[in-house]
Length: 469
Ligand SMILES: [Zn+2]
Image (cartoon, rainbow, N blue to C red; front, side, top):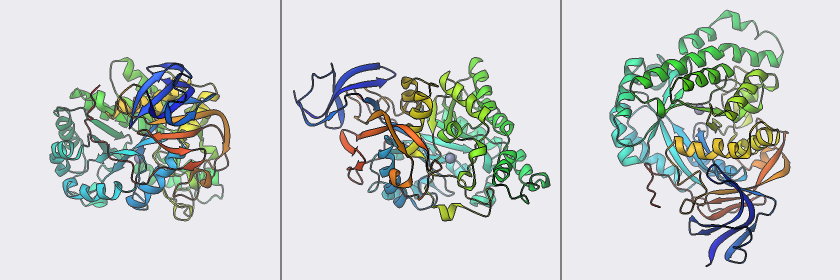
């Protein structure tokens, strides 16, 4: 037997296998063999010696905003290249636009296809009644089965997007029923934010008192005060309750949970039998508000050390099942405003997702390596209906793999990450645990610091996936 690629003598890690020393043989785009350590040596056209390394299913960042600041063509190229450095082999990109998705999406696909180095899927923001009518077309013709409900656009959608919809609950009720009626599994991302509360706080003179002070840290505190934890928690519960009325809570996916309070409430709901899926982002697990400045403006904001510790506990105990990043590629000059509040929200972070979780989750003793794989790959593939094609180490599934050296320490710089942004929110941080190789559908795409994939190799993952094994 011979293979196109073999990876030998590594420790394979996945929720299905646990931790197992072994070899992987790849034929074409798929895993063809999982064998005892050393037994596939000499059988590959290309070979990777993974002695003292771990082999994981490629990381999946389900929450990116490619195209939001620089256009999709540019971001698809630079950000997917950077992703390979961090072991990310699939991303989910959110896209929202007024008007007919049927008319807009062809162009969007055309910009993506020649540029992505790795595979990708899209999630579409629902902004109007027209979008609800398009749901069957979007699923059947575009292969997109995930959507997003932005609670932070309630009331302001007509002004912001020019749509004839204030995004109130009667409208949400209509799209949840439409989604629940589909005969394929779907996913509804939810931006949890009580807009009445946060916009009133944004206008509050009480918050302005911080602005005339010269301290950066107080600047960031204003952001935290404008977006309080309870406004996130309450919104998730209220919207999740509506989804539950239509037996749709198992497809309700709370994006970027930033507050310990929200995670604790989610645990309570899950104990009561609600099936809501929770996502947090790397920055809520690895930064605190005290460390943050203009570069870290993001919605929701980074919070306290106590929030961070609670989120880690909830990642460890299973309450939070997926990790994403809310990645945006912007340049420091464009991002930074007069102060924290005036700066643009969002920052680049997909490529640091897996290394930070390995470093500050696994090495720091907060979660096991198996749990790290689950939350950065397998659970995400399940939540977005990509599993087992993605997110698993099984014969017949896509050979999207990352080989990591858990002992390698690197200092984060934009040069290391090779993306489109000229800064990282983690600039200067020492992170231990980095990919040495990243494979996309059987092709070695990144090896020892160098991206060797072909631009445009990545492709859109049509869902529901076709998987016959
Ligand atoms: Zn986002």
